[in-house]
Structures are given as structure tokens and as C-alpha cells.
Image 1 (cartoon, helix red, strand yellow):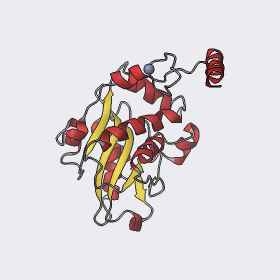
Image 2 (image 1 turned 90 degrees about the vertical axis):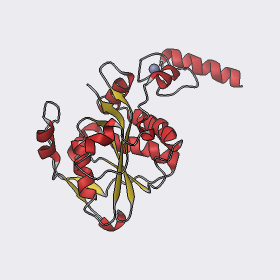
Image 3 (image 1 turned 30 degrees about the horizontal axis):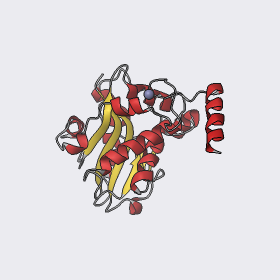
Image 4 (image 1 turned 120 degrees about the horizontal axis):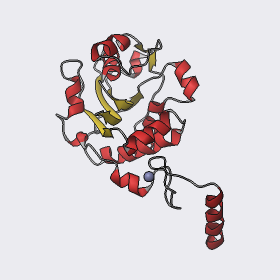
Length: 233
Ligand SMILES: [Zn+2]
């Protein structure tokens, strides 16, 4: 029976090839979303093992972040860039979830997540979310939740206004652009928590800084941050 099923599966794959979202190669029967080669070749930062890493240093003197890390490096022509492009601009939510799971397995093998009890994705403005169909940080967070069991909450931190695109802005402009746009909807549900803020790509850290500063207004909140990639372009 399995033999016929496999034959049928191969036949369907010929008609509708399943392609890797990182490199475009055909996926094997046991692969999904990302091929084994991409999985192996995506460079890991391993920042979760180095407290004084470049992502942590971004926040020094700006806001109180306990721990910060990123899964990979966002560079031109990188597989992670292609994957994130498919997630954000081609609407392939599964890519975010899969990468969230992969990163969560890495984080779980260390003490990075040990006292974190809540995951909050960086919110998108509702109009942008409608346009894209989902918030990429939500799906990444759900992937992390699936593996770790730490709950993701999406309504506790909201974005009040739409910002102009961040590209081509200086660090100061980016900061003034986002500093007052987030707000907390229910302080009781975040107080005394160590929260993991999740984003797709960290560039200057301004958006995460604005989110963290808003959350830190609540009593006894601690913040750590992770992203799928750290931009070194
Ligand atoms: Zn691939």
C-alpha cells in the first residue's frame, strides 16, 4: 500500500512540484518548506550562547534588555533573506512557522529561554496585517510556541499608527518614527513576567526598542528579544 502511495505522491510531485522556499530546489518526500541543504547551510549566529553579542550591544544604553539573539545573518543573496522574502512578500506563512520551530529547537538546547513565560510578537498595524493576511512575527512566535510550550499572546501589545517605511532612514529618524506608536492593552497580564519579544529581522533595533520601552512601563517586567535574522547589509 505504501508503495502505491509513494508512487502516487511522486506523480503528484511531478505535476505540482514542491519547491524549497530558500533555494527553489525540489523538496524530497521527507522535506517540507526548507530543504536539508538550506537547513544545514544557513549560517547560525549562535548569539544565544554569547551574552555580549552584536544584537545585545545594539540595545546598550537604549533600553533594558535581558538577553538578545538572532538566528542567522541577513545578507544579500542569503537563503534566510530569500526565506523571509517568501514569508513577508509572497505570503507564505508556513515559512515563518517552520523557521520559528527550527530556531526554538536551537534556543531550547541552551538556557536562553529558561525563565521566559510569555512570547509577544512585534505588532503590525491592522491595515498592514490585512494587506499581508498575517503578521510575520505572529507566525514565527507560533512556531517557537509549538516547540517550547511558552504561550504567544498577540493582543497585549498593539501598534497605534502606521509608520512610513523604515528603509532609507537614519537610526535617529527610525527611532522618532516609532517611539510612541505601541501601547499595552492589559498590564495585569504582563506584570511580573519575563517576555520574549519576537521580530523577523533586526536592523537598527528601533522597533524592538520602542516595544520594549512600552512593555517596561509595567511593574516588574523583563524583556528579551529574538529575531530570525540580524541585518548586516
Ligand atoms: Zn533549499
